[in-house]
Length: 166
Figure 1 (cartoon, rainbow, N blue to C red):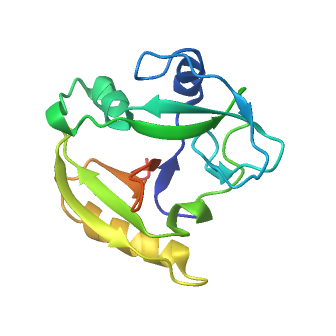
Figure 2: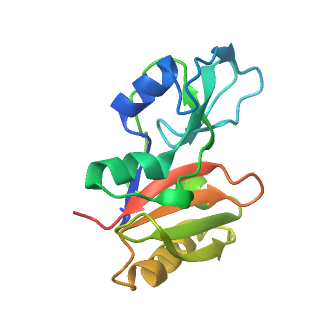
């Protein structure tokens, strides 16, 4: 079990995004014929035949709202895939292997929602959890880091929010 808390998009937030996303638009669901889309509602990948929706999401905005912070220019939006209907959530116990299965950027944010550090994480066969944990250990060693967002290197897409364990 991971020593960090990897969080998908909250089920209530995902429900609102399916109705109207963070760009203010309603997106149409579609059937995924190929599978493999990174699902942010459950931190897994889609399978062929899944009904999905691709929405605009502002992950830091949601975190900042919980804390009364103002991330200013760091309030990014980007595309994320969700199941078109509510799903059961994560199907893993702790570390979601997909988080470090490809090159990722782990970005640390302070209590204001400003970037205070980042790490490039490259996959290591059979050692994804250890590689991710080492990057998180390094980032969370800075007491200013409140939360870490994991993003894809090539597309910048949000993958997961990581917090220290409660």
